[in-house]
Image (tube, rainbow over all chains, first blue to last red; front, side, top):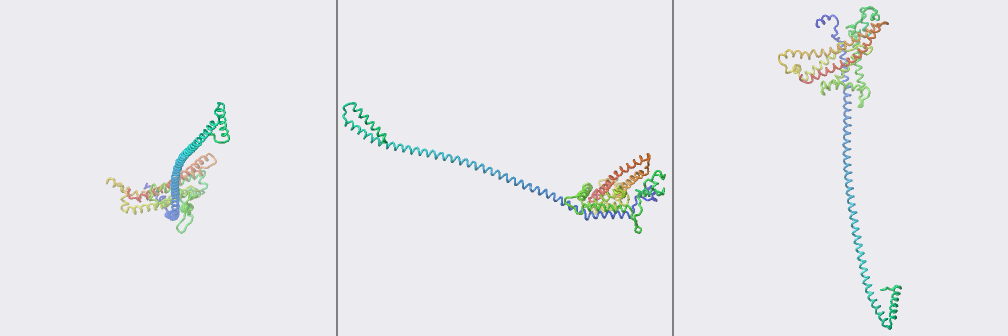
Length: 183
Length: 276
């Protein structure tokens, strides 16, 4: 290999760089490198970082919103449960109160009825007593009147006696019909 | 390509438009060095001559800077158009080259690696761009310039991070028996100071050099063999091969840029951390 290179020394060797080309190539590359390193890459790096920030920020915000929504939902559910309990409690209470009112009413009714019955009984008893008293007096006077009539009439015959009794009873009936208490 | 043909044919037959063909009897104008790689001066300032490879280097620098300027001059949070493409480019270099080789602490070298990758790639792509049709990196001076920068960078960083003695001590693998060390130490040190930079440069240069010759062989043959008779078939075969090789070179161009950049990342990454 070395011998071959030596032999070809007279001919141009493709591995020997031309200095002007090397310098131009280096300068061309360095211009590309400098512009990329100093101007363009910092800009795009900044933009990429910003984009990452925004995406991550967006995700963070979404996560926060989700948490907030969950919290509100929990609160809402808790409130709903409370409200249900409250409603059930009120319903129970109302039922109890209603039952109590009905019981009270029933008790009152019974008492009232008893009172009315009692007062009616008392009234009846009083009326009866009064009627008894009145009757007793009237029966006495009627008996006396009848006896005096009987005594006053001649008690000669049976027919007259019976007629007199009938007349008496008829008078009594008439008295009753004309509104005077019969007894 | 006509320039190459001109240069090649001039020595044998005076009229190259006839001599580059089978019927001229001048023989096949095979591509060669320096014939296919030498261009006359575009202009001269004193003893300094400005030639086509130099022009290509300048154009490539403008193309790379222009593209990244269009992409990143006014970057948007929501990328559009060129910025999308540019971001893909730098993220490729960062995630496929820098991070695997150097980890996160190598992020400061991203502009260097991005500049290397895209400058080399665009220079290589010039191989198949009409009118340019010359891979810049097949001119050893350009890989040499880049190699010198990479070499300087990783040597400087190695000495700075590991100390002058430490840098050389760390070149030698530890835990090797003394007898073997006598052989191994020079090889390892040679590896760092000669073999690495040389292969880094020559790998890129030789691939593009060979690629250029390969495409030239079949391009020239296409024209050389063309005729109204059965020869058209040979010409067409050459043409098809030219197309296939152009596509193949497109792959090689990107691959070589990638290899140069990833090795650079590996060398710099190695210099940043003490130990082998």
